[in-house]
Every structure is written in C-alpha cells, then in structure tokens.
Amino acid sequence: MKKIVLLLAVVMAVVTFTSGSVFATDALTEIQKRGVLRVGLDPGYMPFELTSKKGKIIGFDVDIAKRMAKAMDVKLEIVSTAWDGIIPALLTGKFDVIMSAMTLTQQRNISVNFATPYIMIGQSILLRKELMDTVKSYKDLNDPKYTIASKLGTTGEHAVKRMIGKATYISYETEQEAVMELVNGKIDAFVYDLPFNLLALGQRGVGKIIHLDKPFTKEPVAWAIKRGDPDFLNWLDNFMNQIKYDGVYDKIYKKWFKDDAWMKEIH
Image 1 (cartoon, one colour):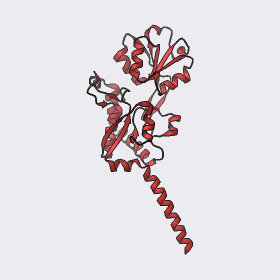
Image 2 (tube, one colour):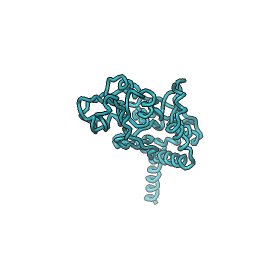
Image 3 (cartoon, one colour):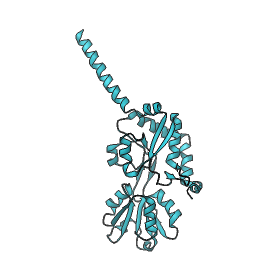
Image 4 (cartoon, one colour):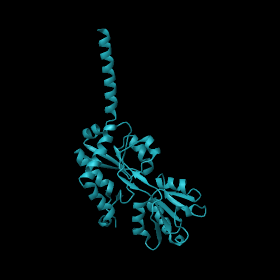
C-alpha cells in the first residue's frame, strides 16, 4: 500500500511539474487571457510590411495578422521592431509571434520555432544601368572591383557573403537607403528579396537601374515563435491551411502582390 501511495505521489508530482512547464510557454492561453495578439515586425519591407503616408503600418503580413486575431477572437497589437533585434525581442516576450517576412534558416531555427512556410522568395539584383552589358548574373559580380550592398542582418547579406564573396560588401540599416545609394551611383548593385526589388525598381529606378530578376536563391518565409510551444505551432499551421482553403490567402496575396492600388497609401 505504501508503495502504491508513493508511486501516486511521484506521478502527481511529475504531472504537476509538466503541466506547469507547458502552461509557462503556452502562448495561446496567454493571448486569450490578455485578449490581444501581439505581432512583431519591421515595417520597412514592401509589400509585406510598410508605413503609410498617414503613419499607419500596413502590408501583406499585417492583413494576415488581422485575420489571425479575428480567428482568435482577440484584438491585434502591432509591435514595430528593428530587424536586427527582432528575435531577441520575441525571446524576451515583447510579442507573441514574428510576422515580418522572415526567411526560415537553420541558424535562426536554433533560436526559434517556425510554422510551415507561407511563401517562397529569393534574392535578385538591382544593378547600375552602366553595368547591364557586362553583368548578366550574380557570378559576374564576384570581383573586388564591384561594390555590392544589402540590408544588415538579412539573408541578402548572407547570400552576398556566401556566393559573391570576392566583391566589396557594404551593409545598410534600411533597404530604402541602399536603393537610393544605387540610384545615385554610390554602389554597383543591391541584393535583396525579389518582391521588394520589383517594387523598388518601379518606384525609384526606372531609367536609372536595371533588375536581374531571376532569383539566385530559394528562401521559404515563415512565422517564428518561441521554442517549446507545440500547441501554438499547431494552431498557426492549421490557421494557414484554413485561409488557403477558403480563399482568404489568395485574396490578400492578390491585393499586395498583383494589384498596385495600395501604393496610393504611400505616395
């Protein structure tokens, strides 16, 4: 009898300990208690997230986040965060999920868990028009005489260092600054995600720069959360499946990637 009582006591202790551990990292429970879904993003990457001329944060990821909060029956809070500090901010509890067009990489996956990727992008090149006859691909830029830029801490920066390592490299805090430096002839090329480069070309580069629009990398983009929360991960995956099944995802994708009416909000 004593052995049975002792065994039950051990089992209850394990259950209590395990339950405490689970609920300590259960974001879904915390979001419901709070009544607010907090989403971290860096609003400088069109058309995923950007700031309108009225100072409002808008974009593809923002519209998805609105639908996510609605599905949870809670309010949405957007937490604007600098890119180089966005993972530390997640880990210290500043928000619940990163929805900021983050590429899923093995290095990042050590620190955070990723939901199933929701879009595939790749790196392309904006180029000084004077180089259009001599540079046909990223391989032609692999020379110290060329100065190439990307945004600090991004997969564009990693791609340059890994695949165009002989070129002279400069990093910028924002994409917009790098594009303006390219337009003004201060650098030879800008390496960044294809969706942004397409928009940047149309906005600032017509007649001044050219676009090598065949991506030379393939990069899955996904939402990131803290490690050790399988319930939240499961919910995010099922949410994405649902909005793809019912057409909501396609509608939001068309608005931001195929139409340009939203550009009126930034001009």
